[in-house]
Image 1 (tube, rainbow, N blue to C red):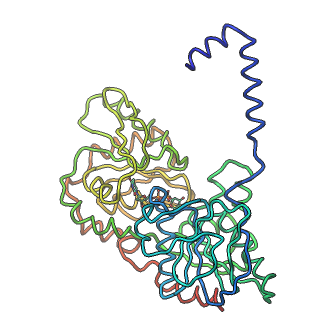
Image 2 (cartoon, rainbow, N blue to C red):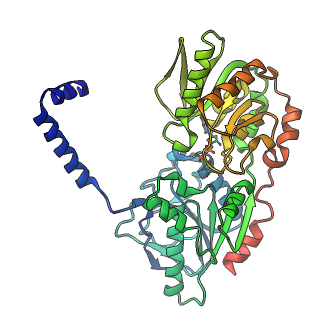
Image 3 (cartoon, rainbow, N blue to C red):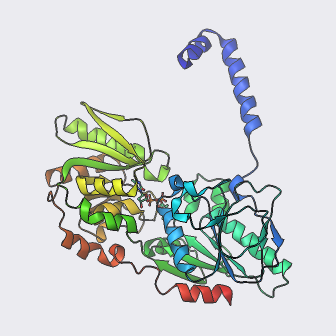
Length: 424
Ligand code: TRH
């Protein structure tokens, strides 16, 4: 069909002009002046007097839960431990059922318009136009992404005025990446960056010291902050012993998310193609996990086979089966997959970014300094020549990664001080 249209256009200038006009008109009509995710959450007075902790998170359905949301939920579950009244407000999701994430089957699902009840509630707020959230004097908020921080700031200002408080309540801001860089220079870039200013009434919680270091180096300052180091997902930790009984294959696992720009899928594919062109005959196979995509031709009969988003159990089995992993993250945050691959004894290719250098954490991690197809192909070259043992040296991995990744104490010590700060 597209080929037919192109042929028609090439033959007939008038058609080209007509199509161009249509295109410009459609574009003009679809230009938007709104950033929907940053639409304010309007509040209404609540008679609810008790202390209540609220998590503002974009989504909760299992297909949206990767490292970022999973960590936010884990952090919130630690912070809210022992607190009777808790809400999870879904800022981007319009509907939620227990089937969307069975881990929350004991929570009640409400609506923005509902009156207040005690207990644990999930409130989808993706469709909030003309609706209000009931907010009491003692509601406190945890933001988890830049647009949720904008909402938390607006709610804070509303509480100050609606309840005639003498100072604004503080909110917790879980910072898991330098989010302006998720966009080109743009409104979203500017809005995301704006959340790192005027931080007097914010308690920042940084996912990793290396990310905090990046903020310091860039000149941002937070009056009150905490940092924690990532830990291995509980489900992966449980699946690890069984996964490590497998014999490793000549198989490369790519963290493949073509839809997430910072995972640099295209460069990985270019690197794989380059390596295959240098080794047209080999026994290595290539799989990609993270997001569904079409199989990618690597030439010489090799393909990058997509496995899609695996369940954590299936992902664990791949981690125990493949020898080499490639997982890029063009940001100051380490991201979880390179650490997970190393924790399962794979040889991992990832990238440095400013002061981030994961090679310092484990001898299994090989961080490339410049992200180019040649660097990737050369790293694969080195690792295929010396791919390590077919069994994982569990003791060595544990020694390498225990401090940062395999222990469970990452939120210890911050719960009580944070609760004191926000509820004082
Ligand atoms: O949420 P993420 O996309 O990434 C973010 C980024 O690093 C972000 O910038 C940072 O803010 C935040 O994490 C902390 O998730 P990430 O790090 O890519 O981790 C992916 C998780 O998804 C990993 O813990 C395991 C899981 N996973 C699956 O469930 N199935 C799969 O098939 C794969 C490959 C991973």
